[in-house]
Length: 196
Ligand SMILES: Nc1nc2c(c(=O)[nH]1)N(C=O)[C@@H](CNc1ccc(C(=O)N[C@@H](CCC(=O)O)C(=O)O)cc1)CN2
Ligand SMILES: Nc1ncnc2c1ncn2[C@@H]1O[C@H](COP(=O)(O)OP(=O)(O)OP(=O)(O)O)[C@@H](O)[C@H]1O
Image 1 (tube, rainbow, N blue to C red):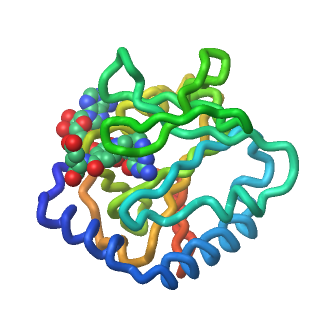
Image 2 (cartoon, rainbow, N blue to C red; image 1 turned 30 degrees about the horizontal axis):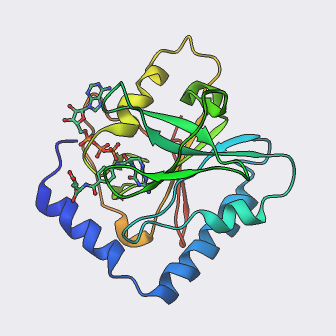
């Protein structure tokens, strides 16, 4: 949605001002809730993110999940502004910082997958509502990169799961045409799933 900058700022501050302790507890609770939901049980290629400014930390999920999984991180596409692709986070990954200061694997070509190739994308967010509408950082990266999901002919669809603190929940978000709803949002309090 065309979000009031004040609202975005308020939500970002709420996230950032959580104590270290709350951050850790929430990350652990979200991890437990997500793993027991079964939503990512059979996913083999999963995108996560390196948290900034109080974003819910997805790393316990990666540490807890057993089995053969491949993990990917979002990278700003160099020649296609506004879009992300996803790069395999392999043991020998070399890193660089993008223009927002976020670390990215500087992947070689064969380590890159488009979003269509992923089973689950764990999505960072600034705000959400119980219908799984999302407010992001305001640059439209995820919306633009995942716009192909509107085309129902894509039979292979990554499941989009937002990770958040409960303090990021709003009563209702009026989505814009380009806003892509998430399939679920997990917080320390609840699992929100999009209705049919
Ligand atoms: N952890 C994480 N990684 C991510 C995202 C994210 O939301 N979280 N993104 C999700 O899209 C992409 C990066 N998008 C971002 C968009 C804006 C800002 C940001 O800090 N904007 C500043 C303005 C800075 C500037 O323009 O130079 C701001 O809003 O204050 C950061 C990341 C890809 N990686
Ligand atoms: N599929 C798309 N095609 C073209 N432009 C888009 C698309 N999706 C979003 N945008 C543009 O991106 C801008 C930011 O969108 P929005 O405020 O919804 O971002 P966001 O979801 O909060 O951010 P992010 O995904 O980076 O975390 C909008 O002005 C919109 O015009």
